[in-house]
Length: 474
Image 1 (cartoon, rainbow, N blue to C red):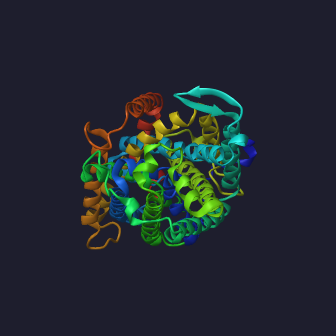
Image 2: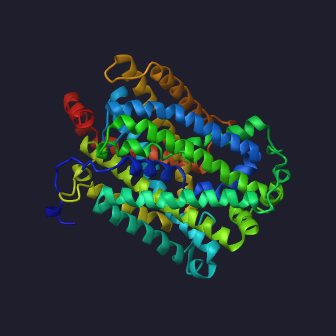
Image 3: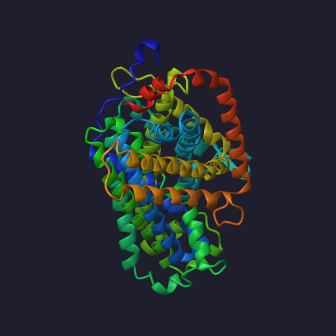
């Protein structure tokens, strides 16, 4: 892009409609994990334990979403949690929150894209499991899957660049197909003749206590439901009142929890679930659906996964670019990130950056990306924490109209966020992160400190009144 095609005007066009925003949130919540992780869920907690875990996680997210609803009304700006952290803690808290969320959001784009490679190798191994290049951390990288992932990133990036309205319309279409495919899978396995409640025994994983199993699922709830918080990232582009944001987030979380439960129970009910997971299959849900519904049902599952992947890429492309745009507008990142395309009114440079980073990630192999995403759940939990703390502050000051229960819900959301962080960070807890994720976290924190040291002088020199104008008053 030439310099003449970009403007420093930092206003984004308000064109997103309610159904597009709801599809954005739901499409991000239900990513590929809903279809490829049930085997892991069953091993961790058993069918009932896993179902209770995802439903309990959804309930916790509904409480936290209440604080997001307050903050979307108070600060309908791009950057969301970055701005909320600034509101409650100042510039350095905003930096820390934005640094963690930027990695989390951006990494989910290539993670979804590389899921297409797994799908391709399962469906058409002769086509996509070709051109072996090398192995990274035990994961073999194929040229076919890199091409597939790169094509998805480029296509979505071009749509994002052309305008948020086009991206929103795409999200509605893809999410509609996704929901329809999940309903067909759930109903189909139920009436297939192979499903039986006897296959759900034992209800909980025998290797650990029911509480420990459910806790293991709850610990990753910030990652499972990451996506509803993409809605506030686009708040500046709503063509409707931000007050409707809470209802749309609650709809996305509730529908997402139900879809997680449907897929888990469909996977576990077709054959005895312990026999299914004992072989450590590449795709437990794929095997269960193919055995019970045949090629037609399996085609619906493939469609569901493909739609989930593309909705995830599309939604997190939008969220990560808006976060980087907000940080650039606050002058924490170079002003290049805050430039807006004059005709499309999109954060063109931030979109380009996300695309370039995402295109390099598949070359490192999916295992490395998974390490980064594991620790991204921690960054997401910190984003929840700052949002809930900011909602407490807003409710106490009365600067934005809030309901009688908003303060209590925000405090409860704060406690839940601390609980998620504890489950991920305290040794012995069921969600304690693996060593590679801790290494990735240490590297990212180190890079953040180096970056702050290099740009910190400029950031510290900004007057608080100037930062207030840049971050809070748009």
